[in-house]
Amino acid sequence: MKKAFIGLSLLFMIVPGIANSANSIPHHAKNGRDTILADWKFTSQHVKSGSIDEGNLMIEDVSKHGNDLEMVTIGDTASPEIKKLIQWSEDDIHDRENVDSLEFTNRENGPSGRYFKTKKGAPINSEKFENGFTIEAIFKLPGKTNNGVGLFSRQGKAADLHKMDGDTKILSALTVSSDQKIHWTSHSSNLNYNVSNWSRSLNADEWYHLAVVNDGSATTLTLNNISDYGESEKVIGIAAATGKGWNIGASEWGNKLDKLFAGNIEEIRIANKALLKKDWLVQDSRDDKPFEGTNKALPFLTNKKNYNFVFIPDTQKYSSQNPEIFNSQMSWIANNAEKKHIIMNTFVGDIVDSDTEKQWQNSLAAISKLDKKHIPYMMAAGNHDYATGNPFLTHYGPQRFQNKEYYKGSSRSGYSSYAIAKAGSYQYLVLIVDMKNLHKDLQWAKNVLDGHRDKPTILVSHDIIFPNVQKDKTIAAESANGRLIWNELVKDHNQVFMTVNGHYFGIAHQVKQNTAGNDVIQMLVNYQSNYRGGNGWLRLVEFNEKKKQLFFRTYSPYVDDMTKKERTYIDYKFLTGENNSFILNWDFKRRFTFKQSHPAAAKH
Image 1: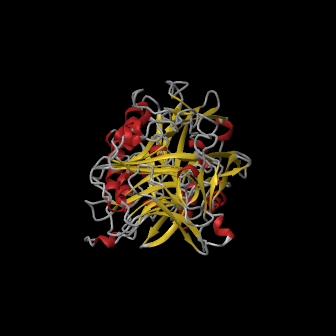
Image 2: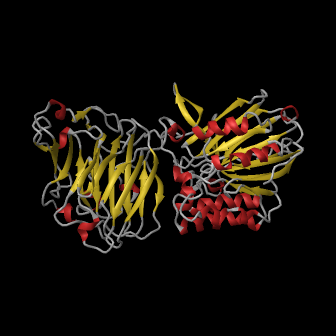
Image 3: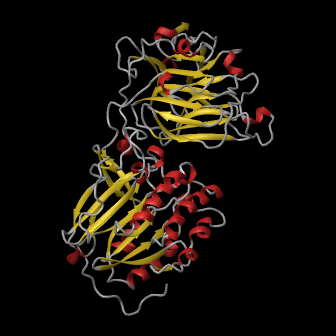
């Protein structure tokens, strides 16, 4: 998985049109005063004492439980530069008059900084939340950060708890990673290790309402009313180290300050139980559609003689956190391959997120649905699939495919392979070229291509092109691996008419000309950084020989299985827009006129 590129999250843009709650009844009054343990409004109207200039600013706890915040300064408090690190801003989530927020401009790895902490002896410092919790934050990020920022953290480390295996350097923290994802990690009372929740990538300069909710068992993370991932593991409470408090605008690592916050914070609130959505600070964020899509029933074949190739984007988040989505994708393919004329299904890599047996088994449970119905598929490995002992080869190596009629061979590394599938007027070759073993398998791949010059070829590798934003427009750019693949395997092999890859966050495509002056389609499909790790979206390419067209669709069987009540406002069966649904004119007879195979076919 590569870190996200600026602008690529436009696909998943959420514009928070959020109902004004400024004049609502205090939430502790609605839920019982003891439910809300701390409520910090970072506005000039809720200063308890002191000032920014004097370096002694104190923010009151609106819940009246005595959990006030005091400002902490790293460096010389008299320095003019330090005074600028926290300032009142007129910007707020509702864009209201006479309402402000607190803007943090801490620099990454700077020698100075400012943040807040709970005062010594504050009741919340010792709270363990055994019956659940709700942590809410209203904040905005200023832009992309190289090392991430710390929003909220519990002081101390797991080793302070004197628990077996409790050597984790961090106790609990809410941070934003370098690729703009929210990460909640917490050491619970019932476990000897931390459990994490991740969000999709966030947009810069955009307000968000975040809720981390634990019901006394499972923890979910929700952004702008949409839950990205939930933990199936039982998680009880938030462990506390004696004598330690909380940081706001900073995170710790090993009992030392780690990351400071940059951006705006308007409010942070903590409850000692799981609050219902209707009781959150923000109830709705549905004014605008986040991206283009439709739930209309669209045909997968515009002519009964047409046929489809399916490409499965990075499935790593399904294997690690949402196996039900993986199962839905594979069940749909298994049940629809014949009637939708699906000729071949190809995985672009990153089958799992990390090398755990549970994740491999989740992937096997889903993909085995194709084996049971003898549905053809091929698999590329991604950078997350490589580990000691070669688990990818154990589960998806040559031995898995050797009895499948369409499978024709693998490289010596076992990671690269190829297949031949008949469709329409042609026999198509699908060539998998491994990312990690690219140099080692390069000659093998050339031999395969030289031995099959008469077959239209789709080349799949995990890393070929990535999205690059220029003048607010996403274009495709070649990676180093992609450049090597083009120069060595594509430009002088006229039969290669398409390359497909994953790896990079986002979507992009382009059409290039090879040495013979013919078109080669290059396509990136990867939705893992989006809602639910991809929301089940598949990329289908319909081949229409009669109309001389290729129709590219993006479809989610997982969403298609939902009832109207289950769907959120971003759940679409089909994604539309220029990078998700498009048609390319394609003169099959002219483009697929090749020289015959070389008489000396290579050994495979």
